[in-house]
Image (cartoon, rainbow, N blue to C red):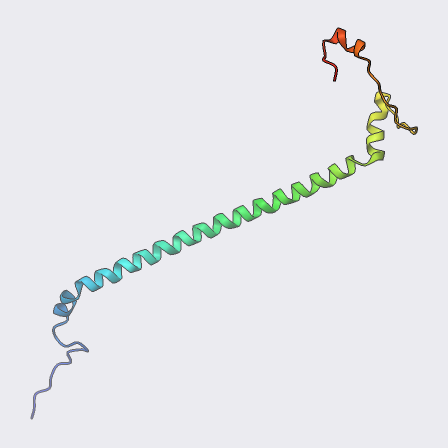
Length: 114
């Protein structure tokens, strides 16, 4: 009867020699794996920062729009009239008057005439 051979696996009995002969390649693959993991963490951090900034931009846009709306409302003629009514100012309905200044009126102020 013939002797049975031991199963040696896929690579044979010299697996440690195979690993040692390709140690440079295995180190390169390990380095690539570390770079890949680091890049994934860096990308996730950047995504979180971007989402935070987008939220802040959205809040700032809401604030800007509400301030612009309030400013437009406060700039209406009726709103301005209501605010200055307490100061004794009122709307003048007539034509505008031209103010004429004589050079003699400017001498005490020491403003040169044009």
